[in-house]
Length: 99
Image (cartoon, rainbow, N blue to C red; front, side):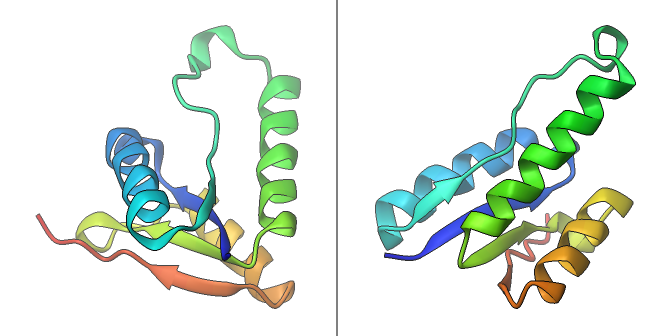
């Protein structure tokens, strides 16, 4: 069973949740996801830093990352996650959907 972590911009949160369900249901993959629905106005820098570390730990636990890059968009945080995954010899899978 492949373990994958979903990576992508929070502007695609709804799509990432749908994609996660599909990958689990159709591929039988164990899908690790970020924490959705974080309100930046109610989150301290320390909390954001902890969330970032938690997400990198998900990548550590995964065989691959699944990058949701709708219309080719990959933001700075996702670029960092891709680089981190590459350095740690993780497979990179791109969703690449165009609307």
